[in-house]
Structures are given as structure tokens and as C-alpha cells.
Length: 238
Image 1 (tube, rainbow, N blue to C red):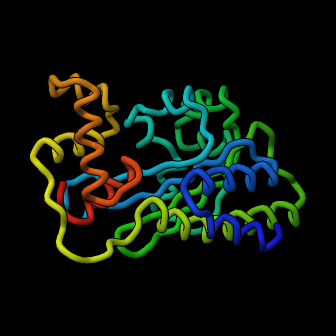
Image 2: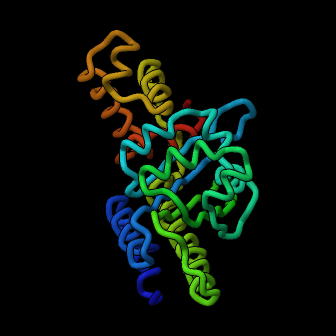
């Protein structure tokens, strides 16, 4: 890969551009799927981490992966918690871990083999990057080594852009005040609920939920639900 391609990823002006550039980069390496996740651990014990994912993962595959018990069993997820170098996954890895059924589920969506890497960063952050495909990886050692090196370098550049775009640093000054209803809606949003779902839980309309979310965006200077949640977490508002 030319260095200019890494630079394009690191200098993406917005989330949509970052996502499209990551997809283009992965496809150039003959991987049709890519997923990047910024994980922010809570500073207080007992709270749940926040996950912000971008990429081109098919929605049906995401639905099939929502079971938290399956996520805990996944050998790729377990490795990502501790390793800081790229590693390969395939059917054998899942079978050895006693999770062959998980591989069978994802293989139906073209996720048969791939490479994953985690970068463990300061300020309670982790950046996870994975590329996946239906075909086996090249057997030639020099091609495989080049591929792993490309992905390691891609992760370094992508995490820089992801941190800047998905969880920007605060500009300082006093924290904005959120109303109890805004905090409540933001907490449900952090759990992955849609505006419609939050409205059903709280007994209000979807339009009312979106009205409160727009107020939260304005107060926090956020452009998306992801940014709003992360800024609120950093400011100890939720």
C-alpha cells in the first residue's frame, strides 16, 4: 500500500469519509468486509464500556451477532482483549475454542477467515480493526507478512481518525446541563435503543425523543448519537 492511502484514512474529514476509505482500503487488500470499533471503558467500576462501530458489516450479520453470550464465547473477541499484534482467525481457531457453531453462523455471511488487531490506548480507549473474507488467506509467507504489516499500519492510522471523529476531546469550560429526561433518553440510547424504542419504553412519541436528542446534540456540540454519548460519559453526565 502506498503511504498516501494511509494518510487519506488518518485525515478523513468526517465519519462517512473514514468509513468509505476503510472499505476501499480493505477491498484493495481483497477483503470485502471491514469493521472498526472504538471502545471506551468507563472510569468507574461496574459500568459498561461504550462501543462505536463503523464499517460495511451487513445488517443481517449484525442481527445474528447480538447475543451477548455468543460474544463472550467468541475466541476472536477474547484475543482482542489482550493481544496487540495482528492475528488470523479461521474455522480451526473456533473449533479449537469449542465455538465451532459461532463460525458456522458467521461463515454463512462470508466471514470464514480474516485478520484482526487491537490497539490498547490511553484514556480507557481501545481500537479494534478486523477484515474478513470468504476465501482462504494466501499461503506464501511474503504475501501474508505484507498483508499483516499493511493491516497493522492501517489500524494505527485509522485509530487516529476514529479518536478524532468519534470521540473528540472536550474543548474545556463548564459542562452543559442536561435535563433529567435528556439524561434518561441518552442512557437508553447508549444501550443501543432506537428513538422509537426509547419512546415506547418512556411512553412518549418518537418525535419527542428526537426533539430531546436534538437538544442534547446542541448542548454537547455533538453531530451524532455516538458522539453525544461519548461526550456525556467523559463529562460524567450519564
